[in-house]
Image (cartoon, rainbow, N blue to C red):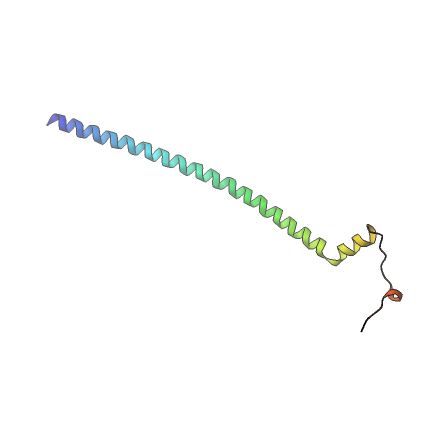
Length: 89
């Protein structure tokens, strides 16, 4: 009977140690996943800032004024005056 009680206590201690290791492993994984999540969120913030900057830049260059300014100053085109404009009906 004494051997059965010692064996039972040994089994309980083994289960307790196994549970402790499992808990430690789970907490370590949770911390690792949290760190990965934090890094990905920081990366997402950077990408969102870049996307917003690109949208603003696209809006600037898609306006007619930017195209007209580029044509006048960089391509050497001249702005048409009323004498050179022909309206078709």
